[in-house]
Image (cartoon, rainbow, N blue to C red; front, side, top):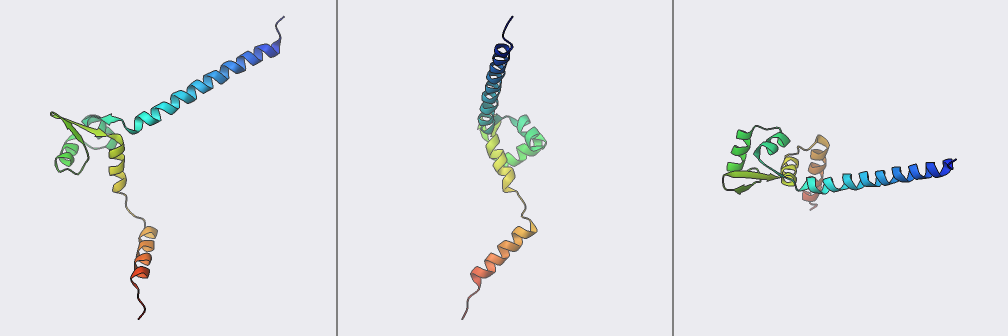
Length: 109
């Protein structure tokens, strides 16, 4: 009869190997996803905009893009930065900014 502890040890080793493989697989796509290149349709899906809107933003040089021939490509990280640049400030952010400005401009004579 086989030792049950050896069987359990073997199964645990197999599980450990599988978990390590999963960890390695999950770590790689994150690095690749950051610099992923989108075509016009993928960028439209990512930004939840229509393709004619994207073409308009690229022709006005509002949206960062790359051109190869007649094709337009976008870098995911640049699209994310573009989205984040449009962040609206909260009321508390505006109040803090205003207080800092008035403190820096106040002069005692």
